[in-house]
Image (tube, rainbow, N blue to C red; front, side, top):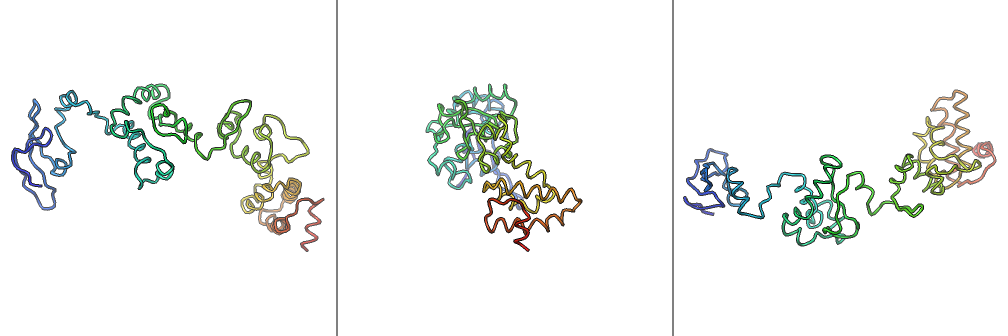
Length: 302
């Protein structure tokens, strides 16, 4: 592309070509056609690609004469808009498989012009940030399978964002539907503990979240089991997971009490592991569900 003196790029008028030093990129001396007639060196590639069209002094005049000029390219709000377009349209994006590939689209009005997105969402964005704090707003689709449109988008915090995922475990309780983590926060209980009770031990919803007490003749809970034998849990976590996930409550309690008994006799961690490991392996290999005491298993191993 040949550039001549007097050529116009936006509001820049070419005055001269700057002499190049070895290794320096090509620049032109330009004059802005604003009222202040600013003269500045501008990179040729910025002129060619339209990245530089005017000096900062004329921003106010340009904004008045161009309704598409938003002056928000470096704001968080604009970055959210770019991220939405990227995840829906850019096949090279890591997020595309969860959005564009699933058929999630951005409405044409927003896709074609940022100013339409600005007009629809900026006021609510500012109101949300004033209420919840700076840099807390994230855009969320009300219907996780729906598109990015004015009717299907709202602002929520990053914590709330994690609740509305396709892989979230949603549970209805007394006419109200929430994801598992929300219920855990609601009842002030550790999420992992409640999940292990509900998923693996097959406790009811109310028992898992401590709304009602578990029956005394049932296992007290996986957290109790792991805490009582914490010193050996590091090396035997996989076997405990197997025993509990298979609902062998009786065997699990016997194993826990056996470990606790060894611990009370001042056996160190290595000795406890050495004694318990073959028992746990035998239980897993033979899929033992019921046994009166561990002595029977110990005799069989011997």
